[in-house]
Length: 344
Image (tube, rainbow, N blue to C red):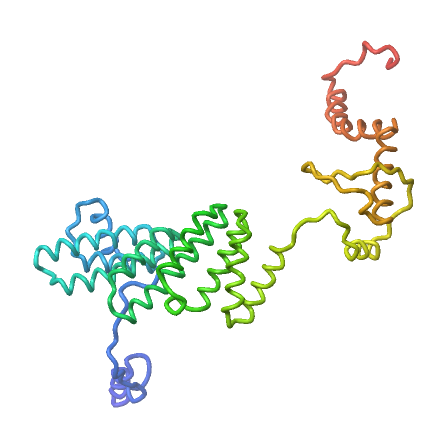
């Protein structure tokens, strides 16, 4: 009996897992996460549904918290809509007296930051740049203004890059010029400023304004302290400065002669070689091996285009797949060939 009592006492101490003496007490407070990252709570879903349908009575702070959950779940569109509603709700609460002017301004600035970030993640770069611009004009604190100015400049760079890739060069130039006019190199950072210069030069060149592109690159070379950026600018200057000429480039032709071993063939001078687009290159600018290559290919295709064997093989190659279903139809009796005398 004593052993049984000891066993029962041990079970109570152990709790079915181990001796009580092995246990330790957690000093910190245990806080359980109600929502894991990437998931949206049922309460947030309910608030969002009622708010987006125009029937919700949620406060500005509730809308911001709900939008934050949607942002963590990467549901950018709903998060942006909720934040826009939160800004309107802030104005109403300020007029109603539940928020002071300072509280409303601080809360609106926080929402603008979050909203601009959501738009940027959703690749709605025009909206993101607009929200950053509004926040930039509202902010008076130097540290905050420097931070938002840099974020605005980076967003404008992404926007200009996207416009340039879509062949909307003039609009991209307007965006980049706005950054150049409204900020300084110190405000947005030297690296971003020089990246804008490189992109601006490329965009100028794409729309045919080569002189403007060269001017931007020359200024970049003279002012940059980054060796990599300076090297890129010098390389682009060399590329933009190359112009097509009708004169023979001896070095390039020597490289061609050393690289290719061309077959021998007859030489039939024709005076000019058509390069397409209405431009012609004098045959006198071709090296002997380039002439041999041109004449060999011309003679090769001329001989084959005149050969009846070539056309017979071409017809056979095109029509032989049709023989397969025809043979199958004949075997099944779908095609009657009794009317052909020599087949009996």
